[in-house]
Image 1 (cartoon, rainbow, N blue to C red):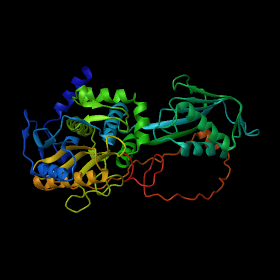
Image 2 (cartoon, one colour; image 1 turned 90 degrees about the horizontal axis):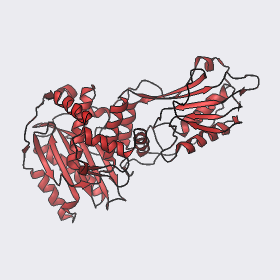
Image 3 (tube, one colour; image 1 turned 180 degrees about the vertical axis):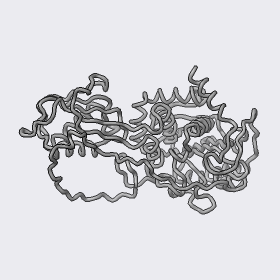
Length: 448
């Protein structure tokens, strides 16, 4: 309860605020005691279009509000729960940002009980791998680790392989299986491990007395989240959610920090897969709280969300016409196999008459592709109804500045390095430019 009160006090301290602090515009944002409800011809036309296609109005949840909540531009079934699919990734992102911080970098380090016996090419003791739960650490990084150890001469570990902390190589793996896969990668690279594989908590023992071999540093959390949300990468969100306490922790965070009631939200999976529930009003409340939290930390929504029509990912092919390109931020949600077909879209759009507006559109029991086209047409019509597009945003730029790779310690770097064998790898054809996660052939067809 104390955390909720504090968060609301912080949000209140940020009003009034100007949108140009984030986007270069000049729209004032002031709090109104009671929202002004506006009639929307765009909404009625769009709902009639759905009816003509024999889609029930009962299966649609829509809410569009001004940033400060003083005006309701469009509202329909806003308090009915629907499956938000991958819109839930924004909730997971919000929790991660508050718990870890936008510039947090995950660390994975490798230590030995002693320095390497270069004559015998062996470690006279155990090999330790400590992880703090990097959600984008996978088999590729495990293979690179193995090769880095082999190139400096390690061929045998006389002790155990000790994994400290929540190491995970795949969202489908337990920590036990991840440790097994790591050992397999070491063995395949030519490193024999005499002892067992042991799992321990990250703080089980101090590694200060051990010899540091290698360290892996991830990109900043904010960059990982942008990639997760732009390409809707389920494995990142689920691994990150588990690290933060699981679905129940994400749900409780939303209730305490976004002024939600328990009946407005149910989190089954942090990625949005399976049977999640959210009202359009809850989605808009979450977006508003996230917007002002980011502002407080000198960030913008586009730092963790894609700009439609400009940025790579699930929104690249949408809102591409010049009148709307660059004016809509959003997170898609798609799951053809649940609730008769789910398509969702939530985010922020810039209007000339009312400045930035928050929107949530939750569609179910219909064709995913048909719903996507309907969402685009509705938002375009609504933006035109409110004076046209008010702001144009640039495309996202990756400015992480740190290579996510294994870096040797001073000791390990001093060892003679064997030349790396060159191998020819046949690249798989892919239309996705995703940086992390399992490769998929197309982002537009993913269930996200």
